[in-house]
Length: 136
Ligand code: HEM
Image 1 (cartoon, rainbow, N blue to C red):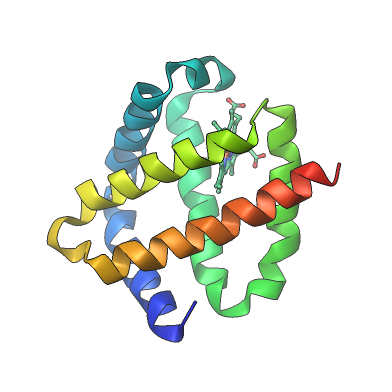
Image 2: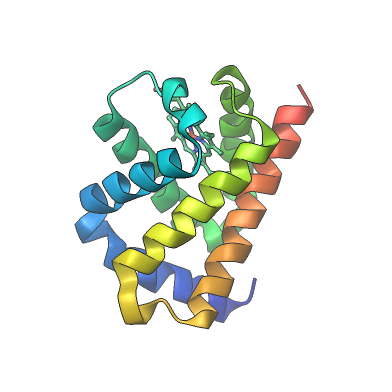
């Protein structure tokens, strides 16, 4: 992940923050359309869940320049997801829904370079969470 990629992610996430509620609603709508079996795993209010999700993405986006500092929090998040019933394959579904949501929210600003940067960052996040989940 190059400094340019980090900048692309930080700039575009800054554009999503003002519309985060709508983005979260779009995200969960897409996620449950892609895999309706995931819906019952979410027990709490979906609006509150959307806020937790966007807050955590903000932490990760801000931490991209100092990854070592956020890895322990991401690992702990991955372990908690085992208790939520999340399987490795679900990370691909969430990744697809996330990229689709960014495309909707960003429009023309969702360039091929921006898409590639987000794909890489999400891949890093998912890989770190899955590895921590597998380590027990
Ligand atoms: C990779 C990026 C992901 C991030 C940043 C993320 C973030 C979060 C956060 C911050 C919470 C709040 C609770 C906590 O902190 O433990 C949470 C809960 C949850 N997440 Fe994720 N998550 C991710 C991936 C996934 C995936 C792949 C699934 C699979 C469907 C998933 C399903 C859930 C469920 C079911 C809950 C609990 C909801 C509830 O109690 O109602 N998450 N997630």
